[in-house]
Image (cartoon, rainbow, N blue to C red; front, side, top):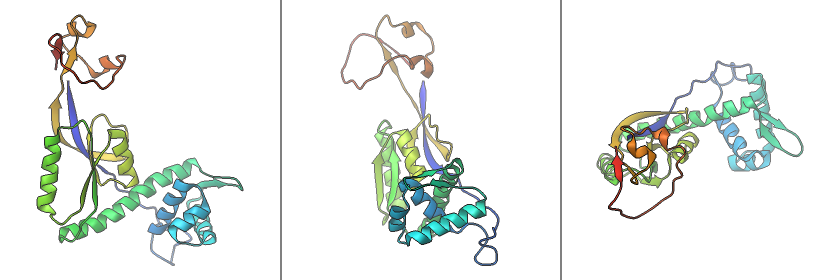
Length: 234
């Protein structure tokens, strides 16, 4: 068996054409601040708290969200006196809004990095299961190419890194496949062989090749110890 180690980043987003509320008044497409408004409101699901976090008046936030919904021709949020919740359209828009904000920030970072001005922080996730020698090489490369940058390495499993990439709390990640988040892209970095150790007499020990799916019904738990008896398969 083997495992692939990959670095993940996120897809770019294309805005829609100009709408009736922006045509002739601002610039084509939805303003970047509206993406931020939706992303924050989708997180807290409360107009008062969202307005406080965004440093805008609550009536102004409500008005901007309403105008955006009119432009899109669909509701992003269902609201009543007791709660605010995302619609299906709101969930789709929020996912893309987060990616748009990520890439807007990445554009600024890229311009600064090109001139050696960007100092971070760069938050890079890594799986606790990867070879630490790989992590050391990544750290060394970043230190040599961006000596003034504030690089922060964050230990996190694959699903946690995928969520961090989508939300913008991570700039990149070193993960072990598989990954189910479709809103990320990857570049192959390293392929590592794994060894499956089995006790003598185990049904899988008689197989020439063991697939990862063969392990689905086997309970797993952390274990430290040594044994002189058993078999191993790669």
